[in-house]
Length: 325
Ligand code: SF4
Image 1 (cartoon, rainbow, N blue to C red):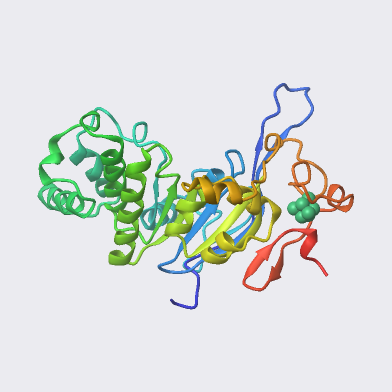
Image 2: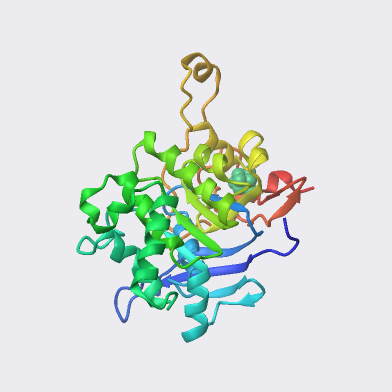
């Protein structure tokens, strides 16, 4: 692994103004609030958390679908937070995204060939249509589809096959980095592992880096070198995948892991489950102090008034007062 990160996110903030009327009290959703992490070349960084924790907003801010409110995003040494025009176009060629919903993310009126060729045309990658067509055939093979699928429409494919088309479209411009936004959540369990294994194989072959967003920690662990856990816009724990999965430090990570179903009923019975009470609080009015204090079984009076700062504990970054000395 090279020494320098391909992507550095530093104190990133993405806020949305959701104030309703002109004279109403200002309401700001702090979807991503002061998040920092690096991703190395060829690395997969898994990002987990419940719905509404800000992980998708973070992914979309990195690909510049949302403008960051503050902080910096550095890709291959270039700060991309404020880039526009030709610089943004060049960045988008290197930074692609695979979307969660393989049904909504493909234009039903375009053939598979047209869908995969479109980004090549936008980025002027080949001179002739014959070259583009040949590349589409290659990409279809890479993602496990057949060359004759090129003339078919998305409606003729299963969910797993459509996600493969989405992957081929992302690969069409030879990116260096892919943000995979819950790419398996909408798929049958039996298909999920196939798509994850396909992404792993493609990464090995093409030397890509991934930000892999999901709410299922067991699947994230399978594909990720390192894992970050988000809660209410904050990164609460981050470290090597095995450490986070087998020895979680933050009470929220522990609760997420205890919620994973275990197929063996005897093992499941012996394991104590932590039930996460209530919903994730609104990011418009986050609790004072630790963002997890309203649901944490270990919360103390201090947790309700003082925000824990991220600290290094062995291989891990964790934001919890329990680990402060
Ligand atoms: Fe729980 Fe307090 Fe740690 Fe927050 S800081 S996770 S409330 S123990």
